[in-house]
Amino acid sequence: MNTNCKNRSEEQFERDMRASRRYLTVMAYRIARTPEDAEDLIAETYARAWQYYHQQDSSRATFTRWASRILLNLGRDAHRSSRRQPATQPLQDAELHAASVPGPAEVVERRMEVQDLLHSLSPKQREILLRLANGQTYEEIGRSMGIVVGTVKSRVFHLRNVVAPRLMACRTATASDLQPTA
Image (cartoon, rainbow, N blue to C red; front, side, top):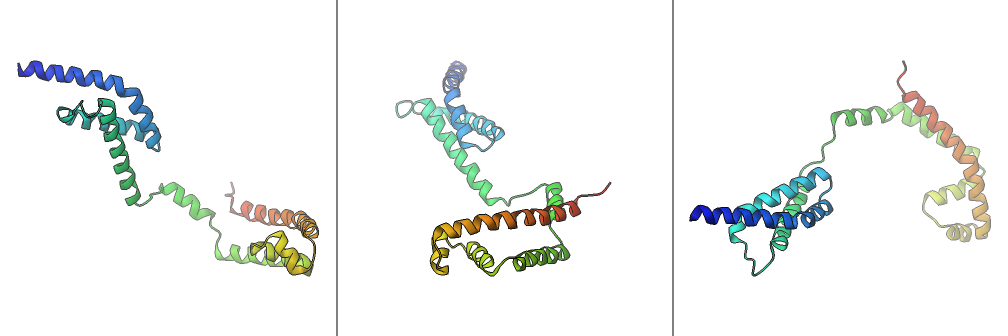
């Protein structure tokens, strides 16, 4: 008789599991960051649900609601444990990042190019550029320089046309220097 009860319990669990599968799957995909993590959550949820199925009280909650609470708790636990683990980066990515970081000579060269660019600008252009770099709005720049906002916008437009191509030329020159030669 005990075997019969166990079989009935297994059969009921399988029915409950099939009935809740879609709901729990959608919930797992919303909680998890990747499809693989979602599948792991679903599998762990059903394992835990089976482990404690005999304790599930259907008068308090349906199987789906009970299993969704298990899934939610497992998702929270996984999130907490992932925050505690240090972020690891594949070695190849780290090597590529290290190769793309400019050396001291390249940094000095870039700074000199930027300084040359700044010195080639008129004092008014330089002042507007530095104020923009410090986060001032067009209105603030206009008030502090005694000019209207339209003039500030016009000067910024012309500055972009002068500065952007030169900065892009500097960037592509240094980026081509970093490319491996055949």
